[in-house]
Structures are given as structure tokens and as C-alpha cells.
Image (cartoon, rainbow, N blue to C red):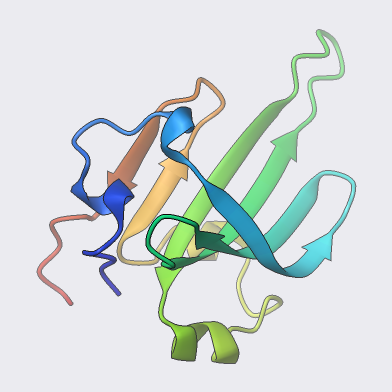
Length: 114
């Protein structure tokens, strides 16, 4: 689903300060992986948030990669948190990526498939 009403969809340059989310549901929380259903406080858009921490054993500079998939209320009800790996979630259309360097970008935002 395309979250056209969400301010994140409408912004040209997204920064970490643009995120004003609250956790609606915790699917799981492990030591270095966690998956939530989150809600944008500005527009109520729901996102499945998949977070993976890559451990840097030598330098201690652990990196967190966050994938946000916009979902409708119906899709959120049917979402199975164990159905897809983090890599499979990246195939969603569209997907919002928040990288360890704090760059944030939409992937496949202009896709014609949906």
C-alpha cells in the first residue's frame, strides 16, 4: 500500500527527526532483532518495523538497519511476523529504509505495480 496521506511519503528529504511513531504491537524482541507494528502519530499510518542490529565485535560500532513497510489496518491484522525474513521484507513495495548513517529513503516509491 502507498501511504499517500503520511507526511513521510510527502517529504522530499526525510530525517530521523521526522519520525514520531508509537509502538502498537510488539511481534518479537530478541537481543539483536526486533519487529513491531508502529503508528505514525501525525497521520495514523501503520508501519511494520523490522530492526536488525549488526554486531561489530572488534570496534563496538554496532549498526542498526530499520525497514518500515506501510500497511493498512486490514494488512496489519493479517500480518504474520514469522512469515518473512528481514531480506524478504525488503521486497515489499514500497519500503522505507532507515540506515545506520541516519539516511532515510523510500525504495520503489514510484513503482507502477500498485
